Image (cartoon, rainbow, N blue to C red):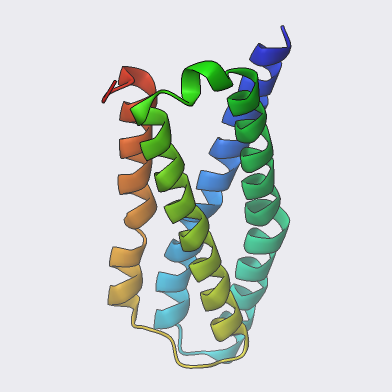
Length: 143
């Protein structure tokens, strides 16, 4: 029973984390295009709350429950190539998360940031990583 509870909490955490990873860069697109100060201030608040109140706790929960699952099933996971590839992709997501945090701070301090066109492409990175992780977890390939 415990492994299923841990797995469920891991999935809930992942969904919450990805909600932030998908939405925050989209906010960056609109923020980068905003020219009025009231709009910029509104985006600063939204970005800060999304990153700090939802994204970071969800990332931490994802890592805790994922590590817990790895501990429970270590004999299987430690010898599975797909698991190590997934772990590498999770490290990339952590880096992406922290890059988002750096952009939140730059926007908040009104420092120069890339254009909305950059953020439109930047927004697609977690989509590609999610697709890869889902296929790895479901197919367990490469074995």
